[in-house]
Image (cartoon, rainbow over all chains, first blue to last red; front, side, top):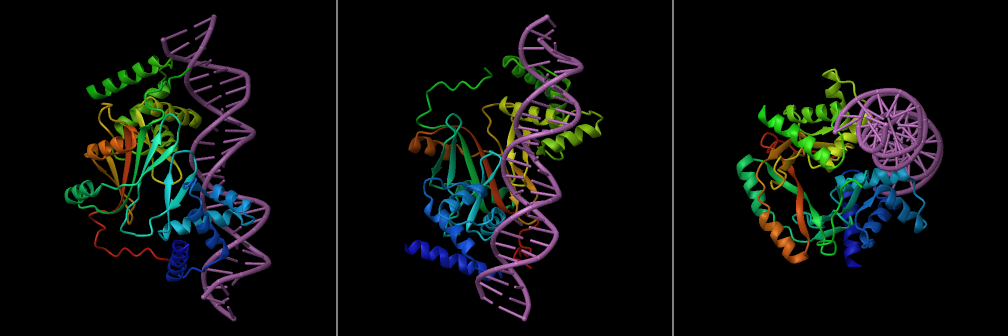
Length: 158
Length: 158
DNA sequence: GTTGATGCAAAACTTTTGCAACACG
DNA sequence: CGTGTTGCAAAAGTTTTGCATCAAC
């Protein structure tokens, strides 16, 4: 509860700091990401559908505009699983905490989250060697999940 | 030269191993990725354009079909920079060598490659803790390149 | 009251697909 | 020759945009 209130206040603050306005649409979109623990990686169309189930009949274009906006405000993060649509997930409330990592099973296509970061060393190396100042990262691992591992992984042409 | 011949033979081998046929289209598409050092991350449409400049007038659908095929054969890798199109780059000839990393400058939008991998420790940790067997990864770092670092990074609404 | 936001419909893009003609092995 | 491939045009799917109306500050 308290976290939701904090997140809403944070949205309000970031909006007004950038001369945007708070609207019911923006509030409810954020709400969806705060509630929807089952599937944390939603496309604009999926957000639209979830909202419709909750009887919020917002325009699809509004959803597209606002997930993108929330992403530029650092409230959502863009993520792409190569399924033809851009997805978004809740960003960490603490800007110093980087994104978790995604493990993508090549067999069952499920996506798992790995909550530790553990990239400090690599980031330090990159900054030292290339002069590139890193502010965030996106890491995907492809492979086989515990359930699919060991099973037949045939994926040749039939 | 020798590397190109090796790559072509490799393509031929992987095609026939999977009951696909070698065609001029497939050969020239691979050629583009072997030659095009300037921009190594090409979308299907861009491959199509580059080929047209070289007087190869292949159908756009053929390009789409074949970059995807070369990707499933492990010859190209898919990569997505959230610009609305799927891009491809040449995969390492050695399947044991993982992908390099991409550094994406938030200011000038240029993309830099960082050639070292350095993820073995993290991969071992993930496998140990989650049972997920990793076969490849895709890593993007966002930040500011040596040129843009230190300059004004204003990106608020005007 | 001003300025920004929404909703709708149309438009713009990227990617996929059906099918007849063609070509590799 | 048989099966896979190409090219074309049409279709499908996602995302963006113009504009009149509406609502937040």
